[in-house]
Length: 219
Image (tube, rainbow, N blue to C red; front, side, top):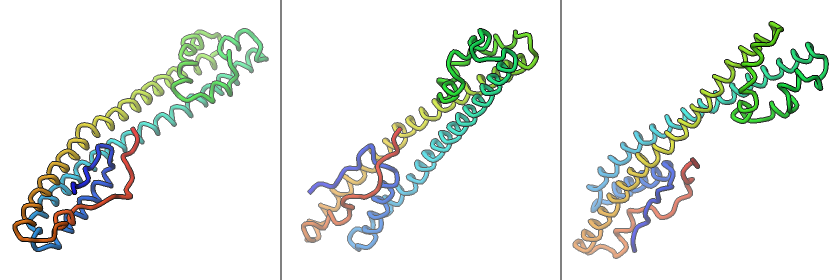
């Protein structure tokens, strides 16, 4: 009976569970304990790979927090522009108001950051040329919000790409190396079991069957 191959979409938690169990199981058998150190080496390497994944995830969370902050700041500035324009023109149907708010303020602020940036991106240049100092100041404020928002969106894309890169470059390679080592070890155990006249299922006793651990985080 062949051993189960660890799939490329396995989570690092699942791989850790497999390695720790197999190291312990080898250690408990006098005829196989000499093979445990190799598994221990993979556990040590696992820690470095897992740390890399955590750092990639941390960067994603930080980037998403920046997107959230940028969205809130943009909403606040959009609301301030709405109030200032209403104070100047008196009603939402006025041409100067509609120049900016072709949709309602709530429709605009309801958008996610990237979509909202698209809706207001051209506003700063016009607001800075308005006669009222308050609107000019809001134009400069909005200009800064757009720059910050663009940076946050770029950071989110970059961090997501880094997480995907880490999986295919580090985690998948690690899984391939672990699988290769496990297959080699299985072959050695089969030969040893035959040489020592051990039970037919003896080689399979050192490989964990099944797992309830989660699959990899979706990218």
